[in-house]
Amino acid sequence: MNQIQITTFDMIKQVGLRGIFKHIKYKEPDLYEKIQGCHGTRFVERLYNFVYGMREVRKCIECNLNPVKFKSFDKGYAFFCGPKCVATNRAHKQKKTNTNRERYNCDKPSQNKDIDKKRKATLIKRYGTSNLAKIRWLKKK
Ligand SMILES: [Zn+2]
Image (cartoon, rainbow, N blue to C red):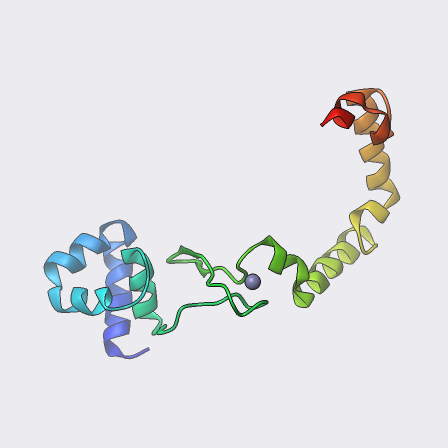
């Protein structure tokens, strides 16, 4: 970060995100112009790109084609363009498997006997059968 970026960041901390638009627009017109020159659809996105020196449109880390959504100033940009890319990303898959192994001692929650028992018990309680294929109203859909 350069000096103006650090100053802006401190300003955000002092004023807060709620009041930062008016503060910069009316009290720091030069800075306002600079921020407006950054890319982004909303002021907060342009502000984020200004503070973090982002010059290019962020793209999905999986397909590297589609732009990703801006979430918020604190969260920044999403990593993926959509659920399809999340599902195909190897690192994400591995992370999911690791979590499942850690928590349930298997690769998928459905492989855990306790979870499967609980799932079946819920089906019996709600629909009177543990077999999904036997539930008539679901078949109609
Ligand atoms: Zn993608």
